[in-house]
Image 1: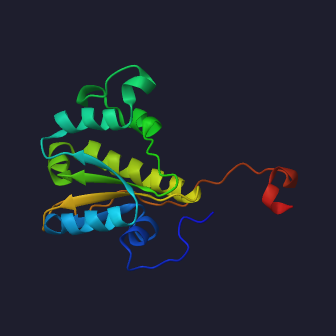
Image 2: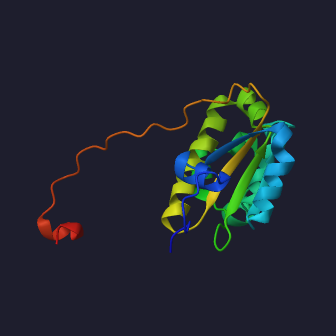
Image 3: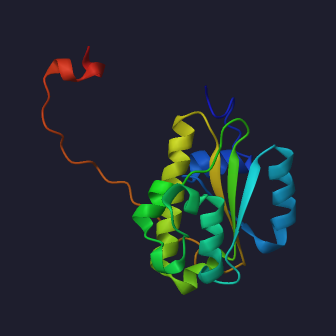
Length: 175
């Protein structure tokens, strides 16, 4: 089943998921209107508030992801390895879709560029995974006008390495 029945590029979700690898950005002044649009379109919203810093936001992310139940420890800034975060990054986007709304992403960016870049990379990867499964998931960054996070490169797409040569029977698409 397709995630979208039509590609209306005027819709925030289409533009974010299909056009921007799962990232949308709005200015703080438009937050209420955009959130209302998201709710009107039946998305579930998970809000990660980074305005108090990563010391508060990372444990909250752990609660959202049910980290302790899944991994046996509380997610905290000192143990928030990005590889582990990628493994445990699960948002239910079935049925109506899910938006991870990040408030104060620019504050988290200033506090730890590497970690925030990792979170955005993980988010874009999972947005593609959900899209491949016919589901809609994207991240909404609520930023002030002029934020230094705007136009930052999150992931680069590279030409993959040459895979070992398989026999024609091993490639199902060659049949």
